[in-house]
Image 1: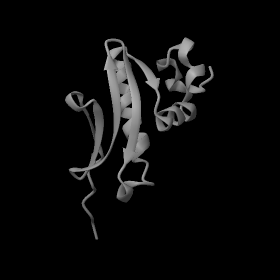
Image 2 (image 1 turned 45 degrees about the vertical axis):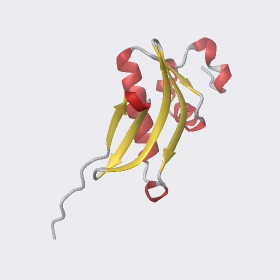
Image 3 (image 1 turned 60 degrees about the vertical axis):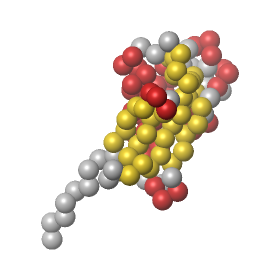
Image 4 (image 1 turned 30 degrees about the vertical axis):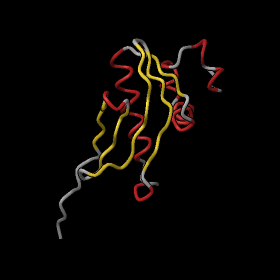
Length: 109
């Protein structure tokens, strides 16, 4: 029997709330909060709702948030441990963190 494929998760930046939100089937599944300065996103907290944990949504969320930062030419300051860990596991994203700040976040070149 053919099943309708679920739509992919949707990530949106909500600048008024200083957060990126991920939605699954229209329902909020999680978010990552940030503080925005003219030249950087300082990520402070990431949360995935318990019913959505273990499905890779945190990675999808952070990937989209970092892609937006890159598109804007903004640096990333990963105060959030989840964002730090994501960057450790995806070294191609390390260049978003200013070289002189990487030690502060226990990130190496």
